[in-house]
Length: 53
Image (cartoon, rainbow, N blue to C red):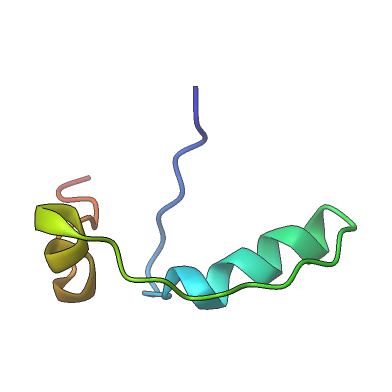
């Protein structure tokens, strides 16, 4: 299972991915990509943010 990650701040995946890599002691190049379809359209509009408690 994937760990749930949510908090009071909102970060883009491009900002979050290098932080996760650094926390794990890794250096990774992060290249932003746009996903096609409904998921790709929902991501920039906060469509994948958790709702509720």
